[in-house]
Length: 298
Image (cartoon, one colour):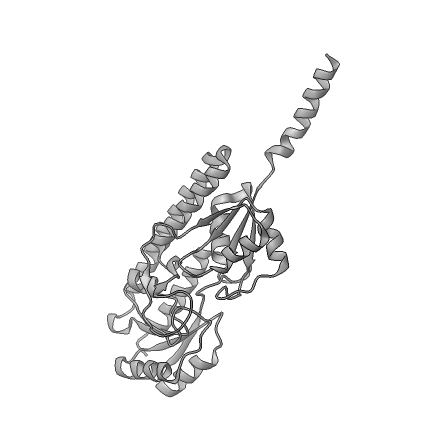
């Protein structure tokens, strides 16, 4: 009888600790890491390999990354050729974690530029810039978390519902902001071709000298093509991205006569205390910068 009582006491004492044990997951880069945290909440412990203000294109993993991957239950990647290094990292680390491609189910855009020579092939991986795609990302993340942690299903479902409501509000905000931009001014130049999904969804023309990857350098012909585009279409502004070298865009602005707009966040969030600390804040910051530069007629 005493042994039974002791066993019950120990079980009760361990129950809170067991209930608070979090699901260990790894995300390839900051945007995916934020999405996993939004859906996972307090039930997950998220390690993000490529953090804020860092370029995930062609990332070279460190030994500490392999340790985190080996200990994880789930690995979340964007897919579409963006973070293929994660699969190599999983193999080298000996990880048995489930690999979840959060862009599954999204029809990818084809790359607009040609001959950039990176490993995306002809697919544009930057699907997160379309809010409709973000809803698919969030659903895929919820499904993976529920499969690994069925006891948390109600929590994950509730957090997904809240996040989808926030994304719907963001979509409305973007459409309102774009409507304030005169139709003939809805064309801009960015450092690399990261905004194709945003442009398709919201009716803004983007052109970039660098293709969809930051691993390659634009040719002289690319730069000349951009300058001609700006002069011919009277594109009102060029935008510098936070992960790109600003010098080429400054040169393009100088030679074309276009003004430099604000900085855009393309492939990485800002630190948490910055203007783009979450994916929603990132997109909201970008549309405000675009609206500021393009809506004014002067």
